[in-house]
Amino acid sequence: MSNNAKSAQYSTLSRSLAVGDDEPDRNLALELVRVTEAAAIAGGHWVGYGDKLKADGAAVDAMRSLLSTVHFNGVVVIGEGEKDEAPMLFNGERVGDGSGPECDVAVDPIDGTRLTALGINNAIAVLAVAERGTMFDPSAVFYMEKLVTGPEAADMVDLRLPVKQNLHLIAKAKGKSVNQVTVMILDRDRHRPLVDEIRAAGARTKFIMDGDVAGAIAAAREGTDVDALMGIGGTPEGIVAACAIKSLGGVIQGRLWPTSDEEKQKAIDAGHDLDRVMSTSDLVTSDNCYFAATGITDGDLVRGVRYNKGKVLTQSIVMRSKSGTIRVVDGEHQAHKWESYARLK
Image 1 (cartoon, rainbow, N blue to C red):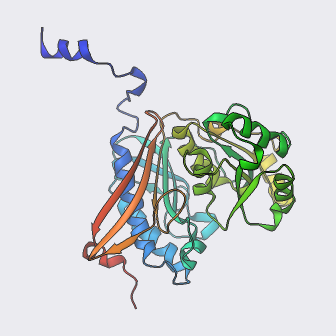
Image 2: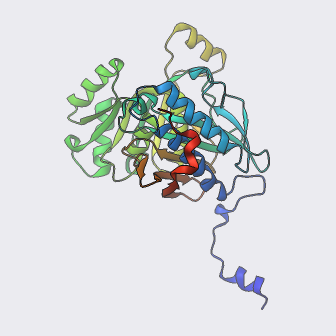
Image 3: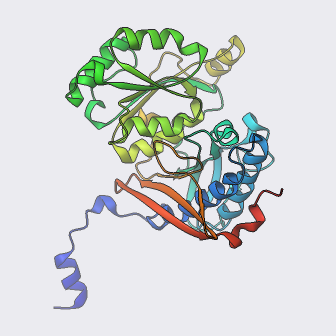
């Protein structure tokens, strides 16, 4: 029997894990981690310095530099652009080395610029990639109402149900009482009625200042003591989170939330149904997508950037939905190699 025949005889790899030559393959995952590590290291120099614009600028520069080395032909569909008026990583920009598969790319060099500037937990550098044309276009409406929970209750919750009912469903699915359920929510005035409903149902709240990508993942990931994320946050962040939740097996549901009559009309003109509740697969249709994040400050997801005897230490999480693989990557970097991104005194 030939070696090839023996290999075929004993191979048990599922065909569902195979990728074609024109699709992103598994090697892309670790390439993306290098990109988020660079952004986090650059942004990490500005932690607690009080200048979120300089922090973001450093992270954008580093992320864009490393993205140019990645083996893919990417188009930024969720970028710095309109929101941050950034000259780099704008929507429509081509990234990567131009070879390999065509991909949609979502970037957030710092999810939580204010958190970084103030030295508060849960700032991360984020990057998500999916096959070309599979990410929902968030340009019509910048905010959406969200509900995120983990795999146990993913098939039970519904954004259209009363808050109390969803909380009871989550509690039942997780085998706990409602007063043991913790809901993560952005600390915003608009959420006061929602907070009242959550507390009236008997559940607990955990507020975050910013950074609902990390919050959404915490709600879907085991071991975080967060059972759900609720409230209104950015539509782009919802799509980025959906790329991660594809691997985690939870659910994100979203409903567009226009902030003005003008934005409402823009959404209607673009063909959006504002009553529609979108699920994870509506936000990202591909089953072969990637998510990478590196901590800038400590948080629920990963540790922040640390410094020790000439070394920079990072912690990242990287996910690939096709295989359902989630890796936590601890990086150790020689500090002098990153001096060009250091903050000058």
